[in-house]
Length: 147
Image 1: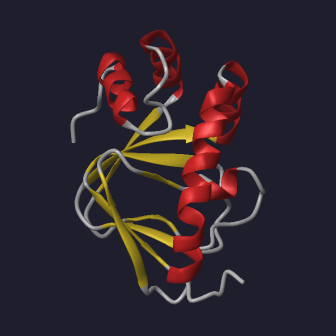
Image 2: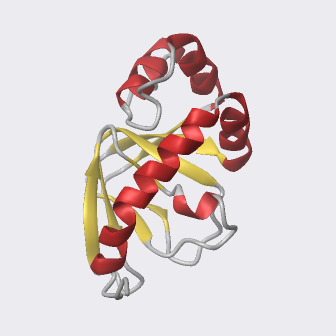
Image 3: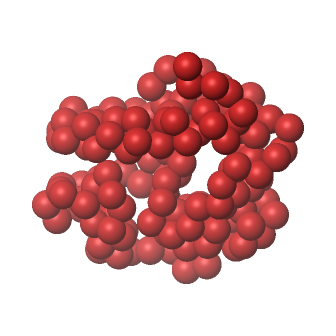
């Protein structure tokens, strides 16, 4: 897949919910910190238990998240992100991510994400809101009780 230019990355970020409210200059700054990763269909992005050190944003393609027993939990597509939950607690990954199609993922390392958050705390608020909104669904899909 074709790598995205800096401008294309910034425009893509504008479509991602956690970055959508940011001005273009800040999006360009974030885009400079991102790395492009190409994956083939059926290629693993990471596995359950792996060390977590980056967040993944899907620029192109579809990624399936599966529980530790490899039971599919959800399919994510362009504009969605994953891998964020482990960035803040130093816990290993609690699920596996596999590309269902060829995919282009933009990644942001923990240190770069923390740098972005220090420059713009609203990114942290957006991440927390997104995570809090999805949290009950994540537990239900894993078969755990919220109570």
